[in-house]
Image (spheres, rainbow, N blue to C red):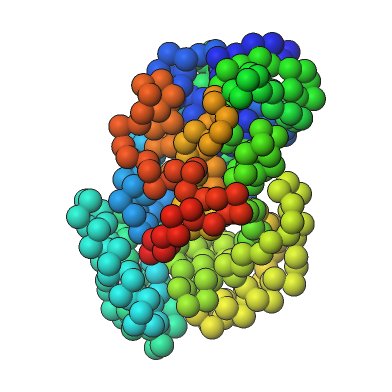
Length: 386
């Protein structure tokens, strides 16, 4: 596709968040939108996502994002013509320390108030859900039966397909080289395929968000961190389906994927780059060690492969959504910390409202880009939300 020379809006990043924003803008009538993606749609962090969808978040805003997203995923095939493989397999958190349980109980009260089904269960009940679990050192578990998973690639393709049908141009294999400003406001982008004049630029660049921000002279406290996921050879000894199960004490999590077991050590590591994500095969040992401690039978499985992805984290673990400070016409929707996929339906809708109506219908002050100073510290020095 030839690069358009003008646009009402340019979205940087063709992952699930960028495609959702483009679709929602077009659905609201702003069809003169260009999405610029340096590889192919959904090929970056979106392609490495585990696909989890949960309401078990600590804040009202994030819980509402999740509840809205679940409603979209439930009807996704009808609306987008793509089967996202959505399944409510549940989320199970294994709790071994009293202070962990107290933190969960505070969150559960809020989640329940907002209409989510989340409950504390006994270790024995957790073992009924996942028979292979070792539970003798647990004091409780937290079970969200309405949580589940879907396919990030399929969801991204659905958003992109509908966006294109509505007139959005999605340009792949093109890298943004500079952001153009005139009298302090955004005036366009220059890419490896040419320039696009536009009064509105939306940074949805995932792990590359901070680098894109710097092109506009904006500091964004988004730090890409590597996490590994490994998978076994077919392993019927653990019968599926299995909830996405997390050992809170170690960060280890696992679930079944068809006949294989997906497992992650829960590692979060700075590798100093935002694009190429090399695998560290020494992490297999850490993953297997944690897995055998919690699910002893996994010691009989063989690791068949794995991948590494980047989690774009912020200092307080909340996304950054809103107008970038100091540059008129530069909007950011970044820093989702690994849950950009599951929150993408709500993100797209509220960003479109903000841009087209002047404000979103939900208070998004939790995600205020101005809450950090230039060094990435919370400007209000408020303690992190639990």
